[in-house]
Image 1 (cartoon, rainbow, N blue to C red):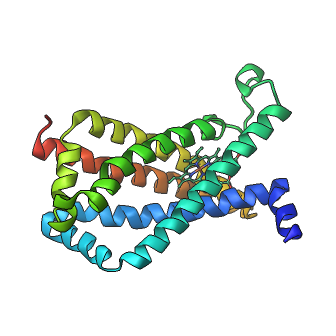
Image 2: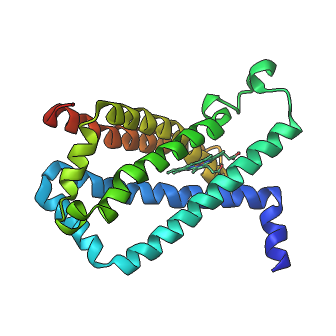
Length: 222
Ligand code: HEM
């Protein structure tokens, strides 16, 4: 496996891991969002979708482990690339004057990513742990009620909205950067990829943010 470790430790190998894991996370977000949007149809549909997923638990557990590994690889390589770039170029762009190819989104990937990570930990603690281990929620299939209760907190809802907007910034640069890494940066098509990334990241952030806003509005804050 020596060749694999040499490949993964080369700078193109690291970028490739970032791009591949980033695209997998982008696809995961699409599926996760479709699932979450069923909340707008009311408790019956949402509870039955989650109950259905609970019925194929072994498969869901395997997918969760794969997803966790993808996150770990993405974060590990992201921090490594950021650290190596920092060591190689100790004077920051802010002091240098920013370059054209390095806009605010690309220069803040490590910070937007870190906030997404903190959000992820709190989000898992608030909803994933409750869905799986709170007996009243899990055994009674009262998943919708657990969401209502989480978003009745204005503090949690506000934090959620801010975090998904920051996720949108991460995705805006991440989307085009991943395609660039795969070599899809032909000057004729790249503006289209950039536009697509902008549309995807804006819609994703708005759609995720609409959920806590809806619950705060309809179920009131406490
Ligand atoms: C759902 C969550 C996430 C998604 C969808 C996502 C997506 C992406 C994508 C598509 C890229 C571009 C890859 C490339 O340059 O080829 C990227 C880059 C990056 N991500 Fe994420 N990411 C997520 C979470 C995170 C987290 C939690 C961190 C933690 C630090 C992070 C840190 C980074 C960094 C530092 C880069 C830039 C790497 C570089 O090219 O220098 N990301 N992300």
